Structure formats: C-alpha cells, structure tokens
Length: 200
Image (cartoon, rainbow, N blue to C red):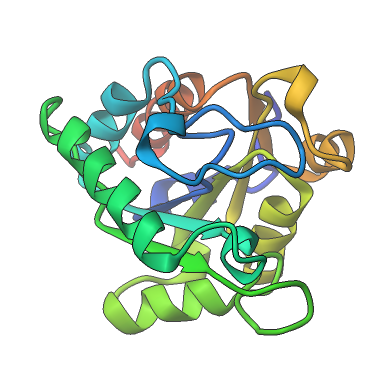
C-alpha cells in the first residue's frame, strides 16, 4: 500500500467511484461480456464493503464502460436490469449504490468512455456537491486509474484475479495512489485511513 504524499487528501474524500466488472463482480475473460444477471457473479465481501461505505456517509457511484452495447451483444435495458438485481442483493445487506453510470459507446465515439471523464460530469450534474478532489476511484484497469488521475481523484487499484487482468494492469498498479487485492480490502484500509486523517 502506498500512502499518497499529501495524505490530507484522505480527510476530504466524500464520494467513492467504483468500476464494475472485476471490482464488484467477477470479470469475464477478455472480450466476453456480462449480458444477463445469471452471469453477474458478485465477488466475496462486496455487499458488506459497500455497506461500510454507506454507513461512513460516503456517496457510492458506479462508473462502467459497457462497450458490448455498441457491439450489439446486449442492451442498455439489460444493464439496468442487472443493476436493479444487484441493488436488491445490496439491500439485503443494508447497502446501496447511489447511482450507476455507464458508457454504451465504442472506442472513439464519445466523451464518456473511461479514461475520458464524461461519466464524472454526469454524476456531478446529479450530485452537484461532488468534487473530483474530494473523490476516490477504485478500479482494476489502466483506464480507471487514468480517469481518476485526469480528474485529480485519489486512485485505488484493485488487483483482482491475476488471470483476468486487462493489458496495462501493471502500469495501473504503479500509477495508482493505493493498491489492494479486492474491494473489501480497499474499503477497510480506506475507511481506516479516513478515520486516522480526521482532525482530533
């Protein structure tokens, strides 16, 4: 774990942006997409980790590239249905995601496909109190970390399954402020650091 040189950033974090595949649910093999709920396998400890973020008063937002929509493999309605089922599971753990944003476009077609920052802009329109320098991004790919770095967020790399890491994962790990094996481990450490950073 690498503590950011300016650890005062930790006391300011009010919103946590989460990538989806590989962070919340098991990533499919490269080039294969989650198209229905039956393929959405929630990773161990995820509902409990989101509950801890909720209980700490942090806004929890999911930002996910969903290129499979542009490729015709599934629809935006399919993604919404998966997210509704995921919220149902979270509610059983007294947890929730405050908002889901997805990019349905192919490469080079938009300003919202990470590492571009359009999904942050969408979130800020819905939640005007969000500020990038008071936010963290937790993701498992280089595009997630670059997204956060462009915005000045605290960046956290989730290592996940080494067999299913995307190309560029090692670079992402080196660029990130912090790195952890899973969302559960990241949330535990982040909340501990936030607690320590609060003025006494």
